[in-house]
Length: 147
Image (tube, rainbow, N blue to C red; front, side, top):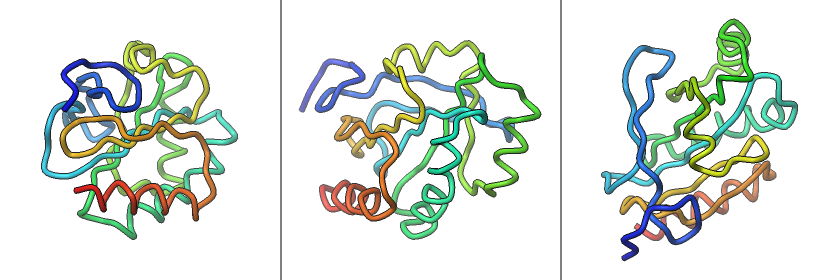
């Protein structure tokens, strides 16, 4: 079991707590009941739009078996556009606001979207960018099988 936090595969996911669009606080990092998928995105990002329906489908397919947090890299975005994006794609999962972009920096997010698949022990298992729905499904199934 790794003991060091770093935004790298086989390291503990760096911890953070952010407020969601719903006003609630959400935390990433450390052991939890189920694995999680943390997706860094922005409303102006074409590949994020491409990926959005696939994330919704993935979430619905495995609902209850993992947590999906969509972390908006807010400094380069506008609140109206964020809300419109979330409404357009009908995100059923929490949308967190990284208002200063500090968490995207901690996670070394250079290109968006970037997603982190984290097991229930808090260890990063995969770092992915836009994948086909089939590949995305395969990675999630593999993460859930580890448990």
